[in-house]
Length: 631
Image (cartoon, rainbow, N blue to C red; front, top):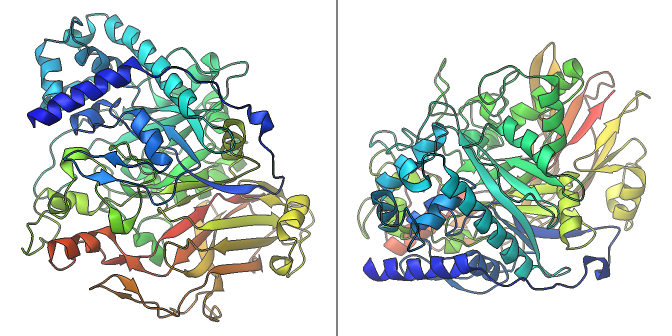
């Protein structure tokens, strides 16, 4: 541990010194494709600039993270190396706004706080000391022993680190090849909840309700500091951003881990602190927050098995238990999941004239090892430094031992975490402006880590076989709206939707494409899932569902049995139950054939049976941003 301590302190000292800003080629010189390209990236990543990542033992700075994203190997806690299979196209490093100043003071010899017990504990990776500092966020009062009575020592230190964040991003930005988006994470918790110690009987006990958002800027025109949970609520953040990010500065926010928000992210009629909505707050939220993170290491926020607007595929990577009747905290409820939110947003729009839940979708990792886009099931090395850096820690077992049932040792809590997701965007070119504009327009989609490519368009003027036309994309952009867009009715004619997807060559073939429809009937949110195209020549039955295609995986080797699934699927579809008088929202979900989950690969390495607490296989997937219909 001592050698790691010296190495980590040296790494932090070097990264706080920061790189020199380098001039990049002009984004205007990058050729544009009007039919747009698919780019894959990471929008939620932590380096050793984040206090929790530092305490987990992560030695990787933003420099290392940017190099990793472009294909270079990095060293993880414990000495193991990691390298991404395919480079990413874009990355936003989103270190926590909270504690940027505290970490700088605690790792800078000679600072007023350096030799104090809090900073000494931080440099010794003391999780209890971290918990005490984290609790100060809920109290909205910085630690006097680190920041001084007025907190000024920390707020002053933040500005210097924020400048380094911008310089790091500038150094690695290569328009047309690799885009670095400047950003950070705002990390407020549900009022009254604090970070605690996981209980033996409930691995998620004392987990704070999360109301976290990633803040992503369009260019290098950014405010001179960051807004953290010490300064106010999520609603306060948005107001501050509109006041500080003016002129050429453009910004958007992305809620994440709504599954851990204990129902508060999508409270209808209430702000994050429980106060009532105002029209100003709703309008601002609609302007600044066009996206939501639908998947990451802490699981899926699309929907939950048996909760709210559910279906048989909603049991995918649910990492929190469902709420018992009448309960809301430490569990999953309908108010925590994206599908329920976007459908209820239709009703809010009809009543208020604005939709605060009009979200496009993105995926990410929330990785705390500084390894953006590290989502491969077969090469998972954890996300949380010393907490989960070995298969033994992740599964909670020793080699050759019996795997526990998932309700005992602390290792079983990590079993429920996933490898994380990715964001796909359709943009004219790989530059900051083009990537950000695609995100803001919601022409984006989230995946569970796979690199499926998927298009989704809607129109009142499509031919019934547009998906078969070689000029599909050109015609679609000319006559329709893409994912993230709005269809306005009035003629009574049902719209047609065209969807097209291709497989990730490094993952499993495609099994089917679904369209998820949501609407409100007599004040009640409703949803229906249509299997619109099936693989292997299967036709959806009378119930609208594809029969299983029989795809299988050998759990002893994790090899996929050949001959099943598709490399490409497409269709043109009309809603058979379309009502021109009723608002509706549609999004696409693409499912792959099964593959081994990372926990099964870990079990193979430990020579134990796959754990029973989680599925041995999963169906990787993608979720497109919706298309909205209004009369």
